[in-house]
Length: 260
Image (cartoon, helix red, strand yellow):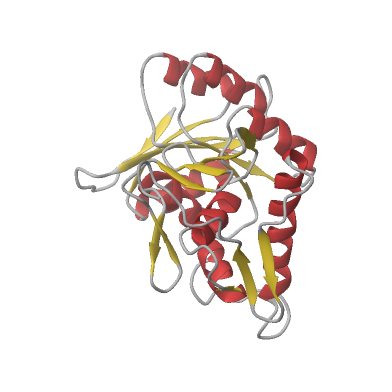
Protein backbone atom coordinates (compact mmCIF):
# COMPACT_ATOMS: atom_id res chain seq x y z
CA UNK A 1 0.00 0.00 0.00
CA UNK A 2 1.14 3.55 -0.68
CA UNK A 3 -0.39 6.85 0.36
CA UNK A 4 -0.46 10.12 -1.55
CA UNK A 5 -0.55 12.86 1.11
CA UNK A 6 -2.13 16.23 0.48
CA UNK A 7 -3.10 19.27 2.52
CA UNK A 8 -6.74 18.75 3.41
CA UNK A 9 -9.34 20.20 5.74
CA UNK A 10 -11.39 18.10 8.13
CA UNK A 11 -13.83 17.23 5.33
CA UNK A 12 -11.26 15.34 3.27
CA UNK A 13 -12.38 12.25 1.38
CA UNK A 14 -10.27 9.13 1.13
CA UNK A 15 -10.20 7.14 -2.12
CA UNK A 16 -8.68 3.68 -2.48
CA UNK A 17 -7.25 2.77 -5.90
CA UNK A 18 -6.81 -0.95 -6.61
CA UNK A 19 -4.98 -1.61 -9.88
CA UNK A 20 -2.00 -3.74 -10.89
CA UNK A 21 -0.77 -1.12 -13.39
CA UNK A 22 1.84 0.74 -11.32
CA UNK A 23 2.12 3.72 -13.67
CA UNK A 24 -1.63 4.23 -14.00
CA UNK A 25 -2.15 3.86 -10.26
CA UNK A 26 0.60 6.34 -9.41
CA UNK A 27 -0.53 8.89 -12.00
CA UNK A 28 -4.20 8.74 -11.01
CA UNK A 29 -3.31 8.87 -7.31
CA UNK A 30 -1.18 11.98 -7.70
CA UNK A 31 -3.88 13.70 -9.75
CA UNK A 32 -6.58 12.91 -7.19
CA UNK A 33 -4.32 14.10 -4.36
CA UNK A 34 -3.87 17.42 -6.15
CA UNK A 35 -7.67 17.71 -6.26
CA UNK A 36 -7.92 17.38 -2.47
CA UNK A 37 -8.47 13.66 -1.98
CA UNK A 38 -6.46 11.48 0.36
CA UNK A 39 -5.43 8.47 -1.70
CA UNK A 40 -4.38 4.99 -0.66
CA UNK A 41 -3.44 2.59 -3.44
CA UNK A 42 -2.90 -1.13 -3.80
CA UNK A 43 -1.28 -3.23 -6.56
CA UNK A 44 -3.57 -6.24 -6.05
CA UNK A 45 -6.84 -7.36 -4.55
CA UNK A 46 -5.27 -9.23 -1.66
CA UNK A 47 -3.55 -6.18 -0.16
CA UNK A 48 -6.70 -4.08 -0.60
CA UNK A 49 -8.80 -6.66 1.23
CA UNK A 50 -6.25 -6.82 4.07
CA UNK A 51 -6.53 -3.04 4.42
CA UNK A 52 -10.32 -3.03 4.70
CA UNK A 53 -10.58 -6.18 6.78
CA UNK A 54 -8.16 -4.66 9.30
CA UNK A 55 -10.75 -1.97 9.98
CA UNK A 56 -9.36 0.79 7.76
CA UNK A 57 -11.88 2.77 5.69
CA UNK A 58 -12.33 4.83 2.54
CA UNK A 59 -15.13 6.92 1.06
CA UNK A 60 -14.87 5.21 -2.33
CA UNK A 61 -12.91 2.48 -4.11
CA UNK A 62 -11.68 2.67 -7.70
CA UNK A 63 -11.25 -0.98 -8.63
CA UNK A 64 -9.65 -2.54 -11.71
CA UNK A 65 -11.47 -5.43 -13.41
CA UNK A 66 -8.53 -7.61 -14.33
CA UNK A 67 -5.73 -8.24 -11.85
CA UNK A 68 -3.54 -11.25 -11.02
CA UNK A 69 -4.75 -13.25 -8.05
CA UNK A 70 -8.13 -11.99 -6.94
CA UNK A 71 -9.81 -10.05 -9.76
CA UNK A 72 -11.97 -6.99 -9.28
CA UNK A 73 -15.26 -8.87 -8.99
CA UNK A 74 -13.69 -11.18 -6.42
CA UNK A 75 -12.58 -8.18 -4.36
CA UNK A 76 -16.08 -6.68 -4.51
CA UNK A 77 -17.68 -9.97 -3.46
CA UNK A 78 -15.27 -10.34 -0.54
CA UNK A 79 -15.97 -6.78 0.62
CA UNK A 80 -19.72 -7.29 0.56
CA UNK A 81 -19.53 -10.69 2.25
CA UNK A 82 -17.54 -8.99 5.03
CA UNK A 83 -20.33 -6.36 5.22
CA UNK A 84 -18.00 -3.61 4.04
CA UNK A 85 -20.30 -1.30 2.08
CA UNK A 86 -17.78 1.23 0.74
CA UNK A 87 -18.98 2.46 -2.70
CA UNK A 88 -17.07 0.69 -5.49
CA UNK A 89 -16.51 2.08 -8.99
CA UNK A 90 -14.93 -0.23 -11.54
CA UNK A 91 -12.09 1.00 -13.73
CA UNK A 92 -12.50 -0.93 -16.93
CA UNK A 93 -11.78 -1.19 -20.61
CA UNK A 94 -14.43 -3.86 -20.99
CA UNK A 95 -17.81 -2.88 -22.38
CA UNK A 96 -19.63 -6.20 -22.04
CA UNK A 97 -22.89 -5.74 -20.15
CA UNK A 98 -22.54 -9.19 -18.57
CA UNK A 99 -19.69 -7.87 -16.43
CA UNK A 100 -21.67 -4.82 -15.40
CA UNK A 101 -24.68 -6.95 -14.45
CA UNK A 102 -22.58 -9.19 -12.20
CA UNK A 103 -20.88 -6.21 -10.53
CA UNK A 104 -24.16 -4.37 -9.95
CA UNK A 105 -25.63 -7.47 -8.31
CA UNK A 106 -22.79 -7.31 -5.80
CA UNK A 107 -23.31 -3.60 -5.18
CA UNK A 108 -20.97 -1.71 -7.52
CA UNK A 109 -22.20 1.84 -8.07
CA UNK A 110 -20.65 2.71 -11.43
CA UNK A 111 -18.14 1.98 -14.20
CA UNK A 112 -15.51 4.30 -15.64
CA UNK A 113 -13.50 3.60 -18.77
CA UNK A 114 -9.83 3.91 -17.81
CA UNK A 115 -9.22 6.05 -20.89
CA UNK A 116 -11.61 8.76 -19.65
CA UNK A 117 -10.23 12.17 -18.77
CA UNK A 118 -9.50 12.99 -15.13
CA UNK A 119 -12.43 15.44 -15.08
CA UNK A 120 -14.88 12.58 -15.67
CA UNK A 121 -13.38 10.45 -12.91
CA UNK A 122 -13.50 13.45 -10.55
CA UNK A 123 -17.14 14.15 -11.33
CA UNK A 124 -18.12 10.54 -10.61
CA UNK A 125 -16.12 10.51 -7.37
CA UNK A 126 -17.72 13.74 -6.17
CA UNK A 127 -21.20 12.34 -6.87
CA UNK A 128 -20.30 9.43 -4.60
CA UNK A 129 -18.40 11.16 -1.81
CA UNK A 130 -20.41 14.40 -1.62
CA UNK A 131 -23.83 12.91 -2.34
CA UNK A 132 -26.22 13.97 -5.11
CA UNK A 133 -26.96 17.72 -5.57
CA UNK A 134 -29.39 19.50 -8.05
CA UNK A 135 -28.77 23.17 -8.61
CA UNK A 136 -30.47 25.43 -11.07
CA UNK A 137 -28.12 24.84 -14.00
CA UNK A 138 -28.21 21.08 -13.97
CA UNK A 139 -26.25 19.80 -10.98
CA UNK A 140 -27.80 17.05 -8.93
CA UNK A 141 -28.98 17.98 -5.42
CA UNK A 142 -29.90 15.70 -2.52
CA UNK A 143 -33.09 15.59 -0.51
CA UNK A 144 -33.15 15.87 3.27
CA UNK A 145 -34.88 12.48 3.28
CA UNK A 146 -33.01 9.30 2.31
CA UNK A 147 -35.99 8.14 0.23
CA UNK A 148 -37.81 9.64 -2.76
CA UNK A 149 -40.97 8.04 -4.17
CA UNK A 150 -43.07 8.63 -7.24
CA UNK A 151 -45.71 6.03 -8.00
CA UNK A 152 -44.05 2.58 -8.08
CA UNK A 153 -40.58 4.17 -8.06
CA UNK A 154 -38.54 4.38 -4.88
CA UNK A 155 -35.10 5.98 -4.84
CA UNK A 156 -32.89 5.27 -1.84
CA UNK A 157 -30.66 8.33 -1.85
CA UNK A 158 -28.41 7.07 0.93
CA UNK A 159 -27.33 3.91 -0.91
CA UNK A 160 -28.09 5.19 -4.45
CA UNK A 161 -30.39 2.32 -5.33
CA UNK A 162 -33.63 2.34 -7.33
CA UNK A 163 -36.63 0.08 -6.76
CA UNK A 164 -39.67 -0.35 -8.99
CA UNK A 165 -42.75 -1.80 -7.32
CA UNK A 166 -40.46 -3.29 -4.67
CA UNK A 167 -37.94 -4.84 -7.07
CA UNK A 168 -34.41 -3.48 -7.36
CA UNK A 169 -33.43 -1.91 -10.69
CA UNK A 170 -29.71 -2.31 -11.32
CA UNK A 171 -28.80 1.25 -12.29
CA UNK A 172 -25.24 2.54 -12.41
CA UNK A 173 -24.49 5.67 -10.41
CA UNK A 174 -24.77 7.76 -13.59
CA UNK A 175 -28.12 6.25 -14.53
CA UNK A 176 -29.33 6.73 -10.95
CA UNK A 177 -28.30 10.39 -11.11
CA UNK A 178 -30.31 10.90 -14.33
CA UNK A 179 -33.44 9.29 -12.88
CA UNK A 180 -33.01 11.27 -9.65
CA UNK A 181 -32.70 14.50 -11.62
CA UNK A 182 -35.95 13.82 -13.50
CA UNK A 183 -37.81 12.66 -10.39
CA UNK A 184 -37.07 15.97 -8.66
CA UNK A 185 -39.06 17.64 -11.46
CA UNK A 186 -41.75 15.06 -12.40
CA UNK A 187 -43.79 15.97 -15.45
CA UNK A 188 -41.36 18.75 -16.37
CA UNK A 189 -39.31 18.68 -19.56
CA UNK A 190 -35.58 18.07 -19.14
CA UNK A 191 -33.35 18.96 -22.07
CA UNK A 192 -30.68 16.79 -23.67
CA UNK A 193 -28.12 19.36 -22.57
CA UNK A 194 -29.25 19.33 -18.93
CA UNK A 195 -28.91 15.57 -18.78
CA UNK A 196 -25.53 15.64 -20.48
CA UNK A 197 -24.21 18.42 -18.25
CA UNK A 198 -25.25 16.35 -15.24
CA UNK A 199 -23.28 13.35 -16.49
CA UNK A 200 -20.23 14.93 -18.10
CA UNK A 201 -19.94 18.40 -16.62
CA UNK A 202 -21.28 21.73 -17.83
CA UNK A 203 -20.55 22.56 -21.49
CA UNK A 204 -18.47 19.42 -22.07
CA UNK A 205 -18.24 18.85 -25.85
CA UNK A 206 -18.79 15.38 -27.29
CA UNK A 207 -19.66 13.80 -30.62
CA UNK A 208 -19.86 15.53 -33.95
CA UNK A 209 -21.17 19.04 -34.28
CA UNK A 210 -22.76 21.26 -31.62
CA UNK A 211 -25.48 18.69 -30.86
CA UNK A 212 -23.30 15.59 -30.87
CA UNK A 213 -24.06 14.95 -27.21
CA UNK A 214 -27.66 14.02 -28.03
CA UNK A 215 -26.74 10.52 -29.17
CA UNK A 216 -24.92 9.97 -25.87
CA UNK A 217 -28.00 11.02 -23.91
CA UNK A 218 -30.22 8.75 -26.04
CA UNK A 219 -27.92 5.84 -25.17
CA UNK A 220 -28.23 6.58 -21.46
CA UNK A 221 -32.03 6.79 -21.68
CA UNK A 222 -32.20 3.60 -23.75
CA UNK A 223 -30.26 1.71 -21.09
CA UNK A 224 -32.37 3.16 -18.27
CA UNK A 225 -35.60 2.13 -20.02
CA UNK A 226 -34.26 -1.36 -20.67
CA UNK A 227 -33.33 -1.89 -17.03
CA UNK A 228 -36.76 -0.79 -15.83
CA UNK A 229 -38.43 -2.96 -18.49
CA UNK A 230 -36.41 -5.95 -17.31
CA UNK A 231 -38.34 -5.53 -14.05
CA UNK A 232 -41.64 -4.35 -15.58
CA UNK A 233 -42.21 -5.00 -19.33
CA UNK A 234 -44.93 -2.32 -19.31
CA UNK A 235 -42.67 0.44 -17.98
CA UNK A 236 -43.30 3.66 -19.94
CA UNK A 237 -42.55 6.47 -17.48
CA UNK A 238 -39.64 8.06 -19.37
CA UNK A 239 -41.36 10.06 -22.10
CA UNK A 240 -39.83 11.74 -25.15
CA UNK A 241 -40.11 15.40 -25.90
CA UNK A 242 -39.07 15.22 -29.60
CA UNK A 243 -36.15 17.48 -30.43
CA UNK A 244 -35.92 18.74 -26.85
CA UNK A 245 -35.34 15.99 -24.31
CA UNK A 246 -37.29 13.82 -21.89
CA UNK A 247 -39.64 13.94 -18.93
CA UNK A 248 -40.58 11.54 -16.13
CA UNK A 249 -44.33 10.95 -16.20
CA UNK A 250 -45.70 12.25 -12.92
CA UNK A 251 -47.67 9.88 -10.70
CA UNK A 252 -49.33 12.62 -8.72
CA UNK A 253 -46.22 14.02 -7.06
CA UNK A 254 -43.25 12.45 -5.37
CA UNK A 255 -42.85 11.69 -1.71
CA UNK A 256 -39.76 11.87 0.42
CA UNK A 257 -40.34 10.07 3.66
CA UNK A 258 -43.61 11.78 4.64
CA UNK A 259 -43.54 14.25 1.74
CA UNK A 260 -46.14 13.56 -0.95
